[in-house]
Amino acid sequence: MRIVLVGPPGAGKGTQAVRLAEKLRIPHISTGDLFRANISRQTELGKLAKSYMDAGNLVPDEVTIAMAKDRMEQPDAAGGFLLDGFPRNVSQAEALDTLLQEESIKLDAVLDLEVPEDEVVKRIAGRRICRKDSSHVFHVTYSPAKKEGVCDVCGGELYQRDDDSEDTVRKRLEVYHTQTEPIIDYYKAQGLVVTISSLGPVDEITRRALEALKREDATK
Image (cartoon, rainbow, N blue to C red; front, top):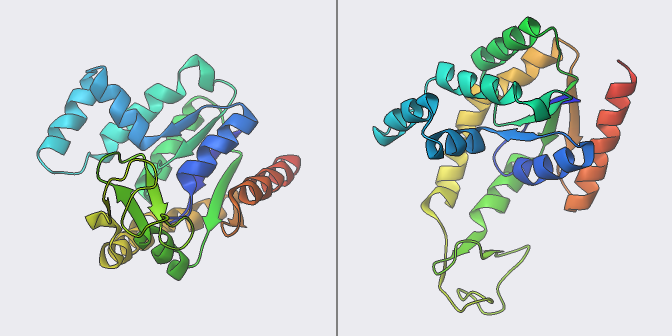
């Protein structure tokens, strides 16, 4: 299957992308991974992207699209892929359609992870990270530390990242609503959107997504 995964910040896209790609046996292609891979390998696209990032600017669409095109042409993506973080806006969605048409292939589904805005704020603003080891992550509601402000694993101080504050989360949501959410209507016009709730246990959301994708695939 060829799938685009969309949803607001805090919807659990990263977690579900990895799980779904593994279950469907297709590569998970994320924008972040594309940037890191190209920059670490010092490809021409990586050097170009880094020049924009070092200057504090957004990487232009054409660079992101070129990276995605290169990745989708790799042998492991011949039978399908799951795109996470791309396309991020309608112009990127249109460019992706053009790329796929050139290869005479089509998307099978656009999986939309739906979650209420207040839940997004609660999920992200409640995160606490260990200063000693950022892989140690807690949540004031869902997975609180045994002792407030102290990492259970190493005893490091727990803190809230600046970009996890409620004000910042709401600004990120505004950007999502303005730039990314319109691609849902774009793909609805093509009959590709499958919407599921992203509330509940992680395993349940994965099961829900796989069932929805199976139903969508059966109608093709």
